[in-house]
Each structure stands twice: as C-alpha cells, then as structure tokens.
Image 1: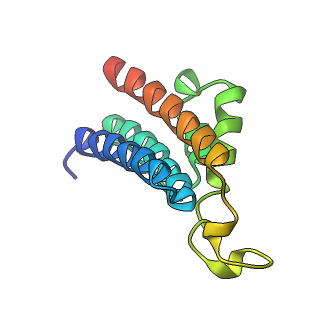
Image 2: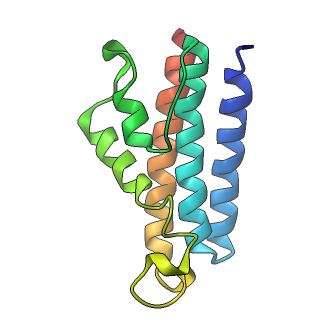
Length: 131
C-alpha cells in the first residue's frame, strides 16, 4: 500500500477550512461534524506515515492507539472525545430526542470544536514533521 500521509493531512486541512466556512454560514451541526472529520483524518495521516492501519472513527481512540512516545496529553485526548460526540448526532435527526440536528448545535459549540480540531491537526503535523 502506498504511503499517502500527505493526502490525508491535506484533506484534514481542507476539512478544517470547511468547518470554519460552515460555522460562518450558520451551519453549526456541519461545522461540528467537519471538525471531527478534520481531526480524524489528521490522526489517520500519522498512521499512514508510520505504515500502520487506523481502524474506527474515534479520534480519541486513534490517538490512544498511537505508539506510546507519540501519544498526546490527556487534555488533548479529552478534546478528541468531545469531537467524537459530533460524529453521528450532527447528521441524523433520530440521534436527538427531538428536532433535527441543526437545532441542537450552537455557534459557541462549533467554535469550540473547531479549535479542538485545529489543536489536534497541529499536533499531528508536528508528529509528521518528525516521522
């Protein structure tokens, strides 16, 4: 399998740009989802660089599966856990007790998750520069 970490990290950057665009447009649920996607793809880029396989969609789970010397702090893993909560309910009306996802997410939440994704992306970029 060819090593494609640059493709993964490039798409992660693009997804992060899209998350910001969606937030500015008031599509807070999509901003939250795209933030999760950006973070997930950034971690997958690291696995690609290492020649490993990344299974699942949990950003926190993927970060915890990195080699011990590459694992981030618990603070960053906790931020990843919050991003993970945006993976499904941002997209499916049945994930909430009532109403569609666009009524459940706020600008404040979208901004916070965007920042968390940015931190994870920067962390992964630093790992890629050393690998």
